[in-house]
Amino acid sequence: HELGTPLSTIAILARELELLHGEEDLPLREDLRTLRQQVEVCKSILGDLLRSADLASDREAAQTLDVLLERTRNRWQLLRPQVPLRVSCAGAPPLPAITAPQTIGQTLISLLNNAADACPTGVDLTGRWNQQRVIIEIRDQGPGLSEEAEDRAGEAFFSTKNGGAGIGLLLANAALERLGGQVSLLNHPQGGICTRIDLPVRMGIA
Image 1 (cartoon, rainbow, N blue to C red):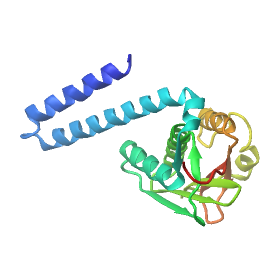
Image 2 (image 1 turned 60 degrees about the vertical axis):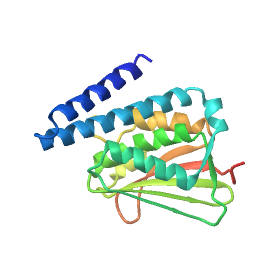
Image 3 (image 1 turned 30 degrees about the vertical axis):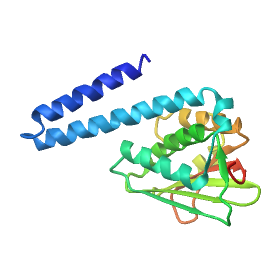
Image 4 (image 1 turned 120 degrees about the vertical axis):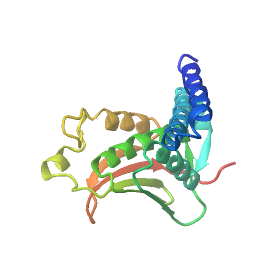
């Protein structure tokens, strides 16, 4: 409530300013529209945080992998519209169901931000699966990990950013470990860094 009310106020004020001044100032109208969209993203993230705070409740929900990736794409592109995001999902039917989708979706957004910071020209988000595991990979088109960084990639507080503390990766691993999964960093054979999420599979949604 303490965050939701100010966000709603910002959205209302932005809408009022858009109605008052948008007709004569088109750039302002676009900026205000973007502001309102970002407020909605913040409200959505806040809702996800409140829901995922109770992991047991989140575990009861499930989404198929393709739906999870598409919803993550839609949310993230509002945050980073200037960075192209290519999404693909492939595997033998049936589609796996992903438990705790709010938790995993928020983790994906954090990792996508890391990839976009490394390479703002484009990011790939792919999903695949077999009978035991679901693999979600985020690949940037940057220079990749140095040999030293690749050796340290599994360490706590490791970061690919200069001066970074590695908090994002640490939190991602903590969230995924509670779900029986893990996150790892490696160099992609075709270049760039691949952030790989490995999760136990669950087939079908009741």
